[in-house]
Structures are given as C-alpha cells and as structure tokens.
Image (cartoon, rainbow, N blue to C red; front, side, top):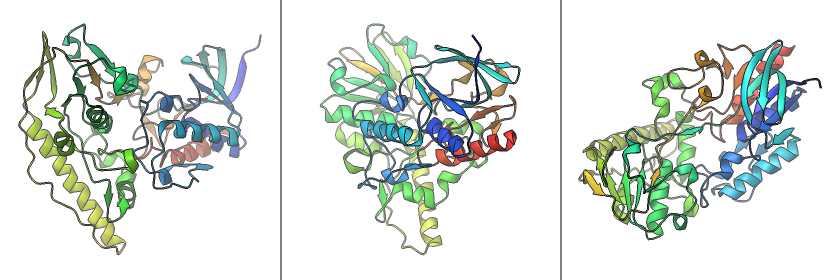
Length: 406
C-alpha cells in the first residue's frame, strides 16, 4: 500500500494548529492536522472550573475571533472548547482526531511521521503541540510520603475529587493561585508554596489588565527583551477570570486563610520543608508590580489618557513556617509550570536549546529544513502562545511555507 503523502503536516489540533490550518487553506496549500485527542484537547484537560485569564475580546484567531455578547467576560473551559470546535468546522480544517504522532524522521523529499494510524509522508511539518507540554515538579518532590496523593495541575479536576484533609499546592503562578483560591473557597485548608511571580490588578482606569499589557507593548516584547533566554520559563502575571475577573495575589490569598510558605525543599518523613525566602519572593513580586504599573502610566501618557490610580501595596509580611507536618493532608498539587518536551519524541536533539525550546527564527527551524513551529511560548513575542497572538505567528509561518513552495 503506498505511503500517504501531504504537502504539510500540522501536529496539534488546538488554537495554534487550527490557526495554521486556516491560513494554509486560505493560501490553497494542502495539509492535514493530526490531533492526539479531540479538537482543543489541551483545553478539555483543564480543571472543571477553568476559564480564560484573558478577556473574550482577546480571542483573535484568524477567521475565528470572538463575536459573542460578552467581550469583557472570560469564557469557561467548555465554551472555549465549543468555540474551537465551531472554528474548526467553519474553516473546514482537515483534522484527524485520535491520532498520536509518535515520532517524525527525515526522509527523501521531507519527513515521515510515525503515528498510531500508520505512517505519513509530508514535505513540511508544523509543530503546534502547545506551550504547555510537560508538567514541572521541583527537585526533591520524590521525597514526599509515598502514601500521600500527588497530582499535577493538569490532573486536578475539583476540590471534591481530592481526599479529605488540607492541601499543599506547590507553585504560586496563575494556576497555583487560582487553585489555592478555589480550594480555600471550598472550605479546604491550603498551604501554598510560593515562587516568584509578577502580579497586577485585574482592572486599571476602567480597562482590563490585558488591554494595558497590549497598549504598553509588554505583550509584544521579544525574547531579546528578557534578562536571559531562561526567563522564558518565568511565570506570567497572576490573574483570574473567575466571577467576571478580580484581583488575585499573595496578600489576598493570605487574607482568605491560605498559609503561605517559601520554596518547597523536600520532605523528611512526614515533615515538608520550605525555604526561608517568602519575604524575598513577596518583594520580588512587588518590584515587578511597580514595573508593570510604570508601563501602564507610560501607555496612558502616550495615548493622552488619564493616568490610572495605582495603589502602593505596602509592606509584605514574609513570616512563614519552614516546616509543615503532612499528617492528615489529603493531597499535594504541583502547579510549578510546564517545560517544552520536544526532545522526548523527536530525534533532533540539536534543534532545541538547553531549556528545550526550538532553535528557530519567526517559527522556522534554523536546524531542520522544512520544520516549523507555532504556539510555542515566546516563539516571537510574549503573546505567541496566547489566543491574542497565535494567529499572527500562524499567518507568518503559512506565508513562509507558501513562499518556499512557489
């Protein structure tokens, strides 16, 4: 039986893959999209109450922008999935669901993808496997008591799904803080192991935080604007869309009754240990807050808008226990972010940097000819992996592919 061949193989049927498909279709380029689960599977895997942290108006997929009656709201998980499903159907995306791409090798005239549905030849490949690939656990996480339930944030569903008892959440970025709030509101005792994460108010001067981040140019910053490439692994500003969107930060969580502690150092028996660095972590977050607020004032000045009122957060109480007994705890939830995972299933180790990010320029691999990326965190700018910016990168990569086929 002859090997099936396509011009372009798109791996991943989420917002990035569907955006690439839309742009390739508009250029008349034949392609197929392979998705391991169902369209929008990464979103389907989020916890039950998950919703966007960016307003609905920021959903700007090419040909699939948000057109509902609540642009300032925050779509919950199932609405996000439904939106992507409608987008795929409207654009006629050639998605094959339930097909796992196991690996991809170079071959004459391009590549051969080994999949759960057989092999497929493609002249070019666009990897759209998401910004969040491999959940990260800190060092010494294996020292926790073996009988204590330990789950990654992607496996968390709701407070009722966890055994009775207090919950240790490791990681205080967007997901960690959202889960700490949800668990506390459900009546659970929560210990939050904190790392460095910037924070900001949900709204300033009557406008959403994301409006200000876009207007200030923050979201358009390239990797070169970071202190180092490793800073790509840093947390996004803490935000939540729950309840129509509201402020969320360490001070608020502490006021709710969440116990804040420093970085997780491991466990000795049933005693969890934490670094004495909560004060430093809080000060770091406050410094990033002031930097962001400076950008907001600059953006207001440039647009002739009144400067939004910005409150000084005041001193942060860094007092925290350095040890917590885990006796009686119900679970540990790891929410320490994600890492790229291309090397685990692709043969080109030299195509990725020391942090696992692709070595590329404008989505084009500079190591493997014919290989492209869309939806990767910081592919071009801060917004590259977001519903606000992924379409721009998809259009650029599709045009590049079209130019090489001419």
